[in-house]
Length: 259
Image 1 (spheres, helix red, strand yellow):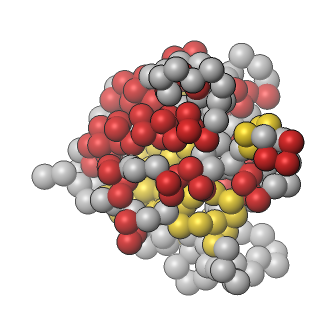
Image 2 (cartoon, rainbow, N blue to C red):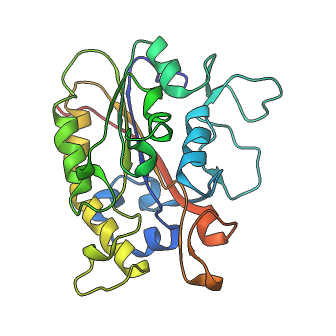
């Protein structure tokens, strides 16, 4: 990652609330062509809900491999005692990745999805406030069936320009309510979350076309921030210490620019 800063664009996509078991059991042909080895990596998230997980992500604490470590991180905010930075880690003297990349000449853009990115409240301004440019509308949110398509419509108006670009997208489709993605469903379930992921996968080629049309290679990070529960052990939702909440899909790869 250290060698890519300045020469590569960066795209960070969080598939909000996507469970690992749903991710690996759902056919995602668009992603399968790009995932290393054609499959998701199983990792553990640093937090059980969106707000806390994203603060950790932007400091460099992406989901951790489930195998014994230590594991060298892609990027990291410098602090005393860090044991997971290595020779390839992009280490920055800033409190968060958007601030660090802005200092490197990047234009930083946030396309929010779930309520923690809704600027109608002071809390909803915190994460978007890390970026030079941020966007949210109800059409990006959890109740909008084409929320990801609306985010891509907005991104299409942003990608022009010569500066390196850091694009962050929080995709809300997998978050409850997601029953509208499954015909006839009356309640949210793993099956309706799978249908939501199918919808998202169908639009990923458009996203990747947008970010590779700028003449630069693009480093992509795509993962879930946490899972969620549909009745397991009596729980519905997340923000609890449960294996299905902590275990998330993760991948990173480089896209070459379109000719």
